[in-house]
Image (cartoon, rainbow, N blue to C red; front, side, top):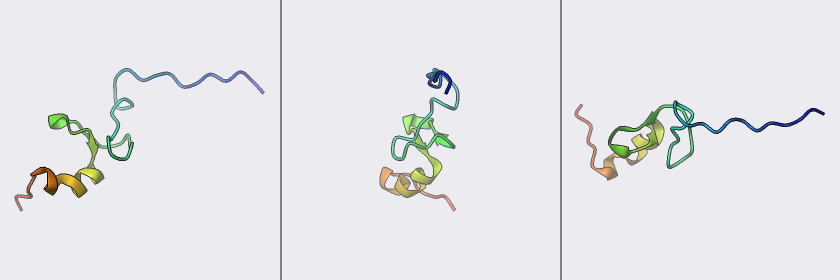
Length: 54
């Protein structure tokens, strides 16, 4: 077995953006400092005061 090197710590880019609620790294909404993935945002948006226009 070879030497094990842990993955590099991310400092910028998509790997840094993490959903605060579930920890997902894909499709994170950063606007207004939300840092929620789109699935979590849809569940919580109405409680936060966002309303659908259509």
